Image (tube, rainbow, N blue to C red):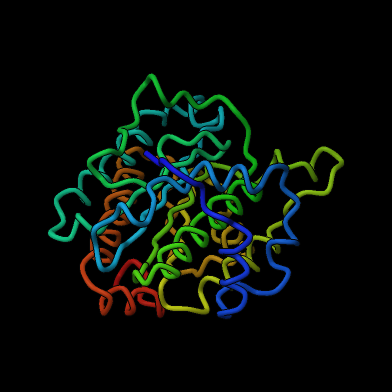
Length: 269
C-alpha cells in the first residue's frame, strides 16, 4: 500500500504550525507512547500515487472494546462500517476518496487507501474484546488525519477530511487511569479546535448505549450538530451509520457542500 520513503511527520507538523493549521504545542501536550509510529501506520498511500486534483479523507474509528460484544453489537458495527464504504463506492466522485480505519484500541484495518483496496469488517478481523482508551486513540486518529491532509496540501493537492469516532463508553483505559499521565479530553479538544478553525475538517462522534455521550464528546471538542446518539437499538445504530454515510458522500461531492457542512450545518446540511 505504501512503498518508498515514509513521510517526515516532523516536517509535516512544522508546516502545519507555520501555516496556522496546528497550534504551537498542541501535539506536545499529548502523552502517547510511540505517537509517531502509530501515525505512520495510518498514512498509507503516497501522495504521488493519487491521481486526483483534490481528495477527501474518510476516517473511521470503530469501538473494539469488550462491551460491544457483550451487548451483541459486534455485527451491527461491522455492518455500519461496511455500509459507509459501500455508500462511498457508489458516489460519482469516489476516485478522489481515500479511507482509513483504525479501531479504538489501535489496530489498523487499513491505512489511507483508495476505496477499491479497503477491507470490509468481518468476524475474522473484528472481535471486540479490549478496553476503551478513548482519548489516547482519538488523538492518534486525529493527528493522523492532520498529517495526511498536510501531506496532500504540501504537494499542492486540496484535501478535506470527515472523521467518525465511535464508542460505547467513556474513557476508561488511558494511562492516566492507571496512575500515569495520559491524554485528557481537554487535550483532544485542543487538537479538534485546531482542525475546526479551518473549513476542511469535520469531526463527528457516535455514542452507542446510554452513557451521556453528548457531554463526553462535547468535552472532547466535537460540536453538538456532529454527535450521533443512537442508543442500544440495532436499528437505531444502523440508521446512525446511514446518516454518517450520507454526510461522507456529500463531503466527497464538492468543496462548496463540504464548506457548508463544516461551518455548522452538521448532519442535516
